[in-house]
Length: 337
Image: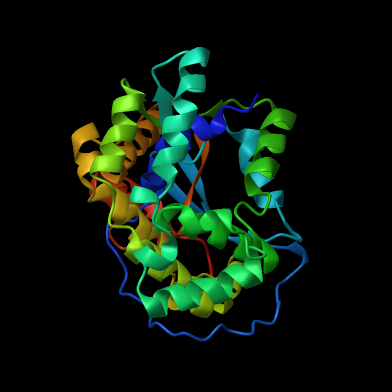
């Protein structure tokens, strides 16, 4: 029996782990569905260079990751393999580890509550929740990417938006990981290097109460839906261009191309909701950053060489993770462009 739906609501909170700490300006809206050519790089590509953080003769090499990436791409990993082969440790991308404080049977009994939390209050449909123009846009994209799936019509906007976005990027030849994590895992195993999870633990001690809090103080997630529609209608070409720039190691183009703020809008909806404040999870991005910086400091102190992965957006931000390390006196060097 599958129990994952029982905690699907709570797992959605993990979106906040990857949130930028500053939102981008919103993209324009439109009721037109873009006709997008599927132009993506394939085959073996060089991938991005790596950032080097050092103090004395201790080094931390960081690979910038990007999502989504071309599904059919194989990136050239010789430079990464060279670093991993000489590394004493690999720091995995920072994340939130969600723990529901209940046993197997407890998760089973959570199923009805979790399913009801995914739906709109009072049995409302998306047509009743969204404005007429937004609903018209949703309908057009749903027919394109979700095969007119009817059950989604009763979901909350944030859940419906996630389902639509996942289907859209898949249909356009993109995937969330592009195989980067799998390639690093394989290299770690090949060279016998330990991988260290960098996780911020969040324990939901009373999952029934959490679900009840979500239903009573749910996020204002209409903006999440609107930004998701914007992303699919307007930003897919930009996503493809960013994916190509990552695959070919073009950092300048990555800096110039705007990133969709779809994810940020959905994260803001969660972080600003009453239930997030009640559960004490409204500042997860800051806590995740702090736990990664602590892991990086320890690795730089302990290991001669460490390999890590961070979001490319964080690496390119002037006030991101690297800025914090630079301010603490570490030497930070960007890849040669």
